[in-house]
Image 1 (tube, rainbow, N blue to C red):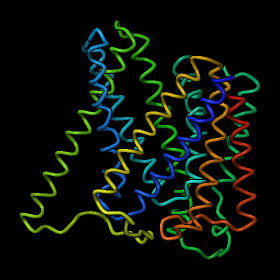
Image 2 (cartoon, rainbow, N blue to C red):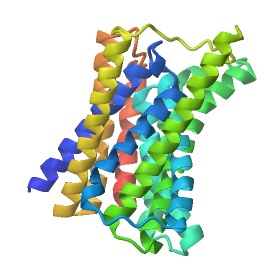
Image 3 (cartoon, rainbow, N blue to C red):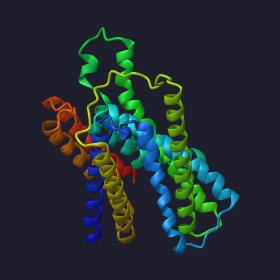
Length: 325
């Protein structure tokens, strides 16, 4: 069963990718800002231009218009997800976002495509809600009844941001499915067009940001970035090392995507997607390990009752994804 091994390898690699994302977002390098990290991640999509010799390029107004919308939604999804990753615990953020994607994908299909839920998808949805709730609930929320509304709002954001990211990723997948379905072009041509357009949009946004920073320095304007009390640390590697690690991490993510796609082509797409629970487990184990090894970067709550709560939530989410798939 080669395809099962490839699927497990892909999900393990994806788990490692999220851990590196967290380490880079936890530093004070240029890439430590979620918006910058999201734009640079999206900008790499422009490298899909290498597929040009293998595709019969057909770029219509339909493809361009919908690709622009897909690119905007995907960049927003990346930004919201990286905000959640920077200020949250990976063992909570990744499972909640990962389980929200199939849930919202089905909801969008029901609303816009008229599809109908099956009984087991209803059961899976309930398990996703329970598992996500377990991961979102933090014991500190109930420790002090007199906590301020602002503090309670921050606690709630640990659930809202991952769920919002999942909803945006699901919307992106639905939009790209619409493009593939109705575009009068072959798959490779549409894939390259959508990715290159998103990459160009991200590169333009990066250029505008750099121009604004340069102009601000020339005019001696104070930074408009909001102050935050979140505990951030200096990156243990330099700016150059951070860039190299970022590129390696995105290459690893591309390799994981390729392995997962190949596994789907060889075996069952439902089983491959259901094995996503392995990804959640890898993130949890690495987060626990690095909390001990690199406490300045990782701040996972590893109290016994919290660990039990997280493991239970991950198991319920994994079963829920399996039923929905």
